[in-house]
Image (cartoon, rainbow, N blue to C red; front, side, top):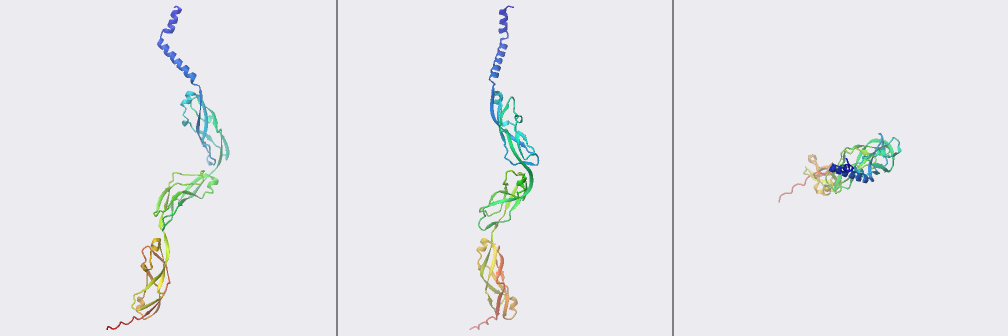
Amino acid sequence: MSLKAQLHGLFFENAALKGAAFIVTLVLFVWVRDDREATVVATAPVRIVIPEGMVMVTSPVDRVRLTVRGRWSDVSRFDPTELQAVTLEATGEREQTLSISEDAVILPGSLQVVTIQPEMIRLQLEPQERRIVRIQPRIVGQPKEAYRIGAVVVNPPEIEFSGPKNIIDDMEAVWTEPIDVSEISESIDRRVQLRPESPLVAFDANVNVSVRIPIETLEVTRTIQDIEVAAVNTTKNVVMRPPVISATVRGPKSMVDNTEKDQIMATIDLSAEERRGPGTFEKQPQIKNLPEGLTLVDFHPKDIIVTTTRPDPPRPEE
């Protein structure tokens, strides 16, 4: 076969297939030539494994800054939000420094870590302690006038905390979030959050804490003067010394303030003395007709001097 025929066969036989192969080769050449190295900056979360029975008391670094290098095609597909956490294991020493190596960072494809910031993390650990402490409700404000706060009930009354031993040992109680009772006149039940003073202590957040604050009518005491004493169950003439007493009552403020002396009845029962002749007796008055809701605390004097005389004879009819 002549040289001309050989060249013709080389270039023109199966021309379509050869053309397609040429185009694919050209595209691959351009792609490989342009797929140069590129860099990208990302952040990765940090997870520190603490030995059992210890707790971290320093604020840890929770993320590290990475400079990542690789082929442009891999970099363009790289999603920094999908980076796995960099896991570091602490020892039982109270003070230590953990180094972050490139091997701790897991990257896809051809990507490699160029720099890590920071490269080291300093930790301070303390022995862990547990303790059950009292839950103390933080109540702010005052109820409406004439009302008061009754016996507050917390459920549960106590809760277990864990944390650094030096903090837990000094922890007697934990406050709740503020509960405002300003200008209220009815009891309230409220679910509340706990507010420990130290961020280094922990408790079971699944425990529901509720506080019941009963609002009661404010009771006051008042002494009412000059209550007239009346003799009952007698037909005789009666003279009493003194003729009035004072009574101390207790009850809701609004009711006590509005009670007048004429509403209270003080009596001396002379039914036994009615069967006897005139005389002088020592008798104790009885307090009656107190408005409902009031309680008698005391009265004074306890004894009244009563003098009886025969009744005046009836006047003759004219």
